Amino acid sequence: MFRVIVSGVFESMPEAGKQAVLAVEGVAFTEEGTFTHDGTLSSFTFRCQVEGEDAQEATGRAIAALEKYGVEYRVLRTAVTDMRDIKIRRKRKG
Image (cartoon, rainbow, N blue to C red):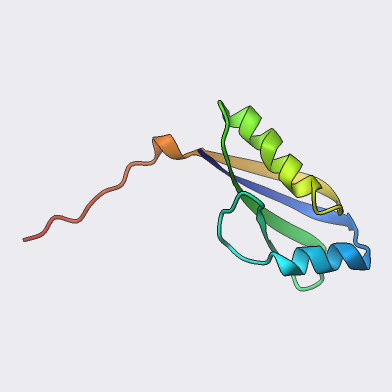
């Protein structure tokens, strides 16, 4: 499981695209992806959680999820986290 963050700018935003983006606002990582954005809907962060063999495949799947919203965009950067690499530190009791 990978968590992918895509940061970018919207190139153009038709009304249907605005409605699609506003409908999935949030900071959660989901398979469909969620958006956070500036108030003008010019820049965005897209968070997506996907399966994949490696970071490159995960990035491709996240971009495919972003494409489903039908908005034109330009990617500025991506960040990929392999959830298998995350270590959870538990607080000791006592």
